Length: 382
Image (cartoon, rainbow, N blue to C red; front, top):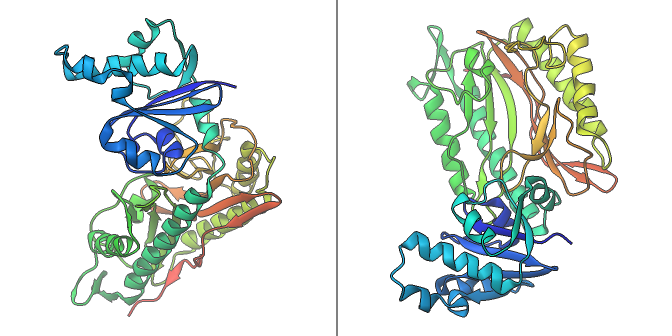
């Protein structure tokens, strides 16, 4: 059994939040030795963590001589470093793996205690692959918020009137910023938050993670990609739909047809044991047969700006982008309990594009699509 050590707070360290499902704003130490789980933390948080009722021994810092260290007039950083070193010794740690984000300021001090530390992010990624019931409930809540936000955005587009080549709603120009404010309010109503999200009209929608800005015009594609985070669990959802106000062009209809077909092909393949690369390849087969380039067909060194220029999907949980990855670089087999996105797209630089994205739970015998929202491209305006 591999021993581990993680240092951080649970708002910025998903490795810790997975083990301690509680908001702890200040860094603390989590150690596993021989399967036994320990937390070393200040007295402000000790009772809260202990109250979770987890199989974790909570050690206040006083237990490892924090009062003695305070009398030594150490700097705040030196005090923290010494507390961590004492925690490792107290727990009986001899060697351990740490995540890539392990604070470098602690490495040398811990190693001076004769403890061997190895950076191995994959160990921690794999620990978080299978979502806990608490995390899965949070993902489902976030997904309902995403769908409610998408409905508000679609309804605003549908209610907009075309006037002199622009869209207006309630007598004012319809802009990306107006749509975003309305969607953000819906997230709040569902006890979810989002730092930002994509509402990208026309050429902006063919620019990857361009967040979008400015007026929305009739007849152009509008890519809307939402990833709200549930406050209680801090877990994310992720979904994308693409709309056109008025009559879509034949080009947009073809982009949508290809994206819709590839999404169905990918969903039908999802089950435990399937390789993410195999699903990506099946999607590329469809896109390439339709005459569009993919990451497989581009030449070395070429920056692909058209066609299907990104991976098919990624894991979602305590991070909006986490393992497993479904793309050109092999990332192993799917396992029951994975929550992944499937997000094929077709784009034309300078014009626009279509992306459709569903959130999917890998089950023991297949998958469950967690997204419940239509795929319609066209919305009607007044």
